[in-house]
Every structure is written in structure tokens, then in C-alpha cells.
Image 1 (cartoon, rainbow, N blue to C red):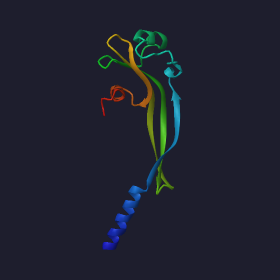
Image 2: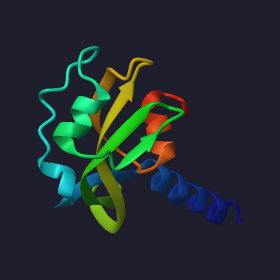
Image 3: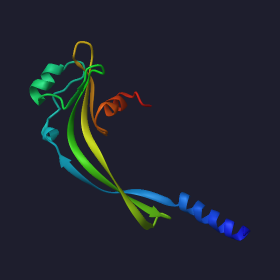
Length: 133
């Protein structure tokens, strides 16, 4: 009985500590906003109106957060699970999104902006702002 328990615990310990997850590929799908050139945007100088005049309406805008975003790419990412760092035991696929975020000050000038991989929607905007840390 003790030997069986010891063997079981050893297998579980090796399995938990010996698993490795590695990126195995990304399939990107450009969205209509993907070709937008953001190089003209300057923090503290570029206005919200200038951005929407050049790039079109934001895909999402959160008035209370003063944050607008454009979805640039969707992607399906694949991760490979390796037992003991060598033996493939499975894969995980998940959806991801490349998003350009713009935060505006009280005068509607860009306070900061950045392109990141994040979740779509209000939670993603709040996460980018640091409200979920």
C-alpha cells in the first residue's frame, strides 16, 4: 500500500513539474482596420478628431474611460503541451486580438496609445489602462 502511494505521488509530482508549454504557431486574420498607419499619432498633440478623420470611427469607444480602439488582427494561437519537456501530449488553441488603444485627456488629445494583444471589449480596455492589476 505504501509503495503504491509513493509511486502514485512520484508520477503526479513528475507530471506536474515536468510539463512544458511552448508556442506552436499563430494563424493571423487581418481585419479591415489592419492597414491603418498610426505613425502620425503623437501623445499630447494629436486630437481624437484628427484620428477619426484619418482612420475612421473607432471600432469601440468607451466615453467614461475616454478610450477608443481599432481591431487590427484576429489570431488563433496554438500551444503545444510537452510531458517531461519532450513528449507531446496535446495542444491548446485560443483566440487573441491585436488592438490599437488610444486614451484621451479632458481636451480630447491623445494621452497615450499602444498596439497590444488583448481581449476585445470593455474589460480589454480597462486591462490596458491597468485597472485589473
